[in-house]
Image (tube, rainbow, N blue to C red; front, side, top):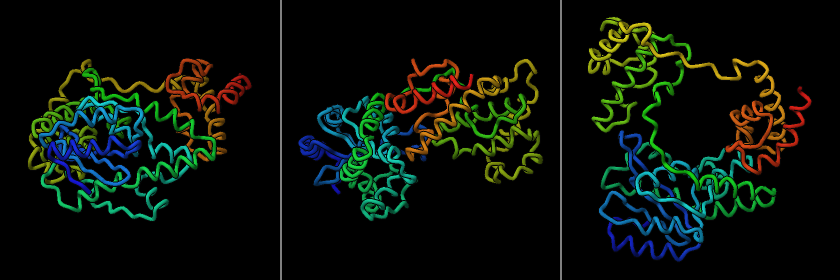
Length: 370
């Protein structure tokens, strides 16, 4: 493993890397330890060396961006989606010539497609997961953390070769190539300011409108604290505690203390704020309360729901025959669009390989179901 935090080191490493036709790439960020997460490490393996680059050092990594944008150099990643977004967000980089080993394993029907499972299956290598939640922004990084980071790319190139052989043997390599092309189009996009992010919290469907007002205001309060402290919001207070507060609406410290999900630390540090947020939300006029989420279209339209279920049975049968996950073959929102329009045309999320496998069977089922 070669640690790179000086410009001369980086220039030399990238010169070597650019001479290879295939390399492996991974990143480490500090999303579990800060609000404004950032790329803290870039790992690159070629056929001879493992490089761990420190983008937090004062080095110019523009040449790396040119390399990952060069389609003549194949880049192997595992679960590339997040890496592509944060590399684009922090540096403006766009990747071409991508292979994703997680996608490859999914298309092969592997039940366990995490990197650790694949390394153990194909190379009898057991990965120590002790540093999965590590703070990668800390410096200096101890040798065991650097070794852990390097392991994320060390076997990716030979792993990609093994998975490609299996995909070719099953006639599925072109499926993978289409999926890789879709991933290459990924860009980072800021969330719209018009969105209501608190609605993404789980287990809130049963909350009434006033409880939703409490949850909304708790979420705003937590987000402001997290931003100011540059800490992940869950380290201020967890979602489960906020949902319980919203449901029970404690208007006193005594009532707050009865909620088991609210830890003593949170009661002592934030108790006054939490009670005040509840009290204010309880006094909001009825007309100003947030609306409950609209039921999904297929729950309002029984005929549409029946068509979706019909398509689902066909999709599940095809997926079972292929031994791949049914959601990978066609997720519910795709089936909903087909059931609504009665056609597979103009559905951006539907890939060509999926259409080839499904179109005739789905359209036949829709015709038979009329």
